[in-house]
Structure formats: C-alpha cells, structure tokens
Amino acid sequence: MKQDLNKGPGYFLPRKAATLLSVMIFMIAVAASAFKKNPPAKEIRLNLAERDSVESVKAFETVYKTLMSPRCMNCHPAGDVPLQGDDSHLHAMGPKRGVDGKGVFAMKCANCHQDTNTPGLHTPPGNHDWHLPPAAMRMVFQGKSPHELAKQLVDKKQNGNKDMKKLIEHADDGLVLAGWNPGEGRKLPPVSHAEFKKAWITWIQKGAYAPKK
Image (cartoon, rainbow, N blue to C red; front, top):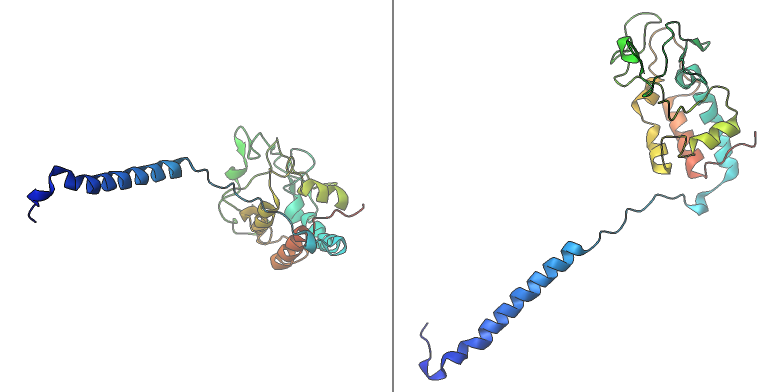
C-alpha cells in the first residue's frame, strides 16, 4: 500500500495509539485475573428439610448391629490387641496396635494378612491395607452403646477428621468391604453391604441423630 505523502507523518499516529491502548488493556486484564481468588470450596452440609430424627435413629439400628458384629468390631477393639473369630476373643498371636495401627517391631499385620484371603478354613483374611485404627485415632467400637458410637462416628476429633461427605464415602472403603469377604469359616455381617450402605447414608442424610441410649 502506498503512503499518502500529502497527509504527513502524523497521519499514522492515531492508529498506533489505538493499538498500544489495546495491548495495555489486555495486559491489565491478564494481571487482574492472576490475582483473582478462586471461590472457596463449598462445604457439604445437610439439608435441614431432610432431617428426620425418627428415620435417622431407625436407620442407625442397622448400622449399629453391623458395626458391632465381629467382622467390624474385631478391628475396633477397646484395647491395643485386635480381636479374632466369631466370638471376638483376643488375637492368638498377640499383635499390638502400634502408632500407625499396623503393628510393632517385627509383628506387623501384613506379615500374615496378605493382599487377598489366604485359602483354607479360618486362615488369615486379606487386604493390601490391613490395619487397626492408629493410636492417635483409636475409633473404638467394642463396649460402646448405640448413643456413644453414633456420637463418636460424627466427631471429627475421633473419626479421622471426616465430614459428612467423607463419612458417606467411607461405606465403600476397602477394609469396610472386606467385612463381607472374610474368608472361609467366618460369619458374614448381619445384613448385606447394600443394606448397610443404605442405612448408613439414611442415618447421615436424615441428620445423623444418636439414639437416646
């Protein structure tokens, strides 16, 4: 394109100024977005309209009898030695909880509890993460009344800092599921995992109410 010599050198200045202004506006917008704070993640809260103390407590009856069965309670003892068998006697090998819940010294849970169940009658059940709750968060089931256990389950200082969302997700935790695959010769929990999960979620979503006793 030929330059119009009659219009002088100042003819192109407005176009250059406009281009420079556009670049400056773009840079300011980029800088502003860099300092923009992301909105905080929303905490999952219970819908107050869904609260129902009667339905919640009724659902907890199923939760409680499941958690107090040997398949659950044996790994949530009052002491630091796990329980064993359908009669929940002290573990014959006498292992101790340890700081991380996985045993002490050479007596580690994983020494006998492999990734899967050991074939045979009454042989060690398996899971790749077999352990008791850690010493700092012992999460005792043994000896707890329905009221005490319900209160403990929703207390973040005692449940591993789990909010309602994480509690619901915990129903599908690998060690929870292992209760329904305990190995040959062991009784299953009193209800199916699907029934337990339904009761667990209902108890929580209806308000996580604790029975009076």
